Amino acid sequence: MSKITVVALGPGRREWLTLGAVDALKQAKKVILRTELCCDAADYLRQIGVQFETLDHLHEACEDFDELINQSAQAILDAAKDSDVCYAVFDASADETVAALMEKADVTVLPGVSLASPFLAAAPRQSKIEIQTASSLEVTAAQNPLLILELDSRILAGNCKLQLLKWYDADQEIFFFPPSQDAVRRYTRLPLSDLDRQKKYDHTCAALIPSLPLMQRRHFDFYDLVRVMAILRGEDGCPWDKEQTHESLRKYLIEEAYEAATAIDEGDWDHVADELGDVLLQVVFHARVGEDIGTFELGDITTHICRKMIDRHRHIFGGDHCETAEDVVTNWEKIKKQERGFTTQGEALRGVSKGLPSLMRAGKVQKKARDVGFDWNDPRDALKKVHEEADEVLEELNGDKSGLEMELGDLFFACVNAARLSGIDSDTALEKATEKFISRFCAMENAILRDGKRLEGLTLSEMDVYWEGSKQRPRE
Image (cartoon, rainbow, N blue to C red):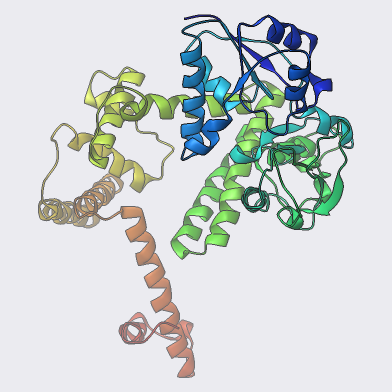
């Protein structure tokens, strides 16, 4: 394979050709341009006697963009079989054919003027600007200015607008650069909603979405939340937020998780998004506290969870094979035992967090016991154990009650077992039973009040009559 050198023509004007690029093009035995369309630099190369071929014929021959990229890279490789090749593109650092070429061969890339340079020079000054091409747009940091290059069609501009409207308001002002071959670019100010309503588009079009002050924005991303938390914990921040510690925040993390779970049960998805936001706030809050006192930072949190998800999904990121969801769970538990150094199943049982709600922890312990075969196959067998434990509770109630707490615990544990083997989540079942009790109690009380009576004036037997009636009434 002969030597392959890639040079940048710049945004197309001859003024943006570097001396290094010109020297390389003059000395090359074979010069290939990705395209000479709309390229003043190509005319300049002819004027100085540089002969070249182009890959423009592939644009018509290829059915899609991916095929064009692969065919272009292969054409350069084929040409390099006979002699050294100088391959010229507009922007070597962003060109997809160059990236494909570098995966297949050793390539020397000479630096040059980027496609973004004319727009950055012309636009109002921005800091931390992010640069993307329209065909591969992905909004990842909405708090930073965004320059979108190569808006070469109305359809592509429309696709970009749909993505942008998830993070920006339709009336937000943007800077649009219409088609031009001029060395100095000009822009027009227009609302984002008009991005796909301009007269003309080609590969020289671009749009810059400027950043807005925090208080002027109505859409926010994850790093906006990080920034808000930094302000609240900062020198001039909120006194309450500044006083919080990992320990003082513990209860809020639990409360917010339960509130999010309740919202999911209710099926109100706007409410779910709101409550999950509260959960996410707790994570970011802990990260900020950790950064302030030196326990850990946000990067530690994201690193731990990404590392865990990659390590425990070896059937995706490694050589393990899992066909079903059950296979995945089994493999997950095996990997977790390896990570924690457990050598016995008893250690795995002890490893179930004591911080979990009691019903949940009991179910997890039982599942781990099942992993080694210590379990019933039929919930009716577990139900017999429930009756056995209930009898033992009765014995304690009839005796000195010294072991009552332990026997009641055994009864609860047996009930969790029966529920689990029946495919029922114990916590959910108990929550539904509690809601049913509240509903029937309210129906009973309403019936008593309709009869001109009060709960406090009735005996338990009299209340029971109304209670039985509440089971037959529609919920109120």
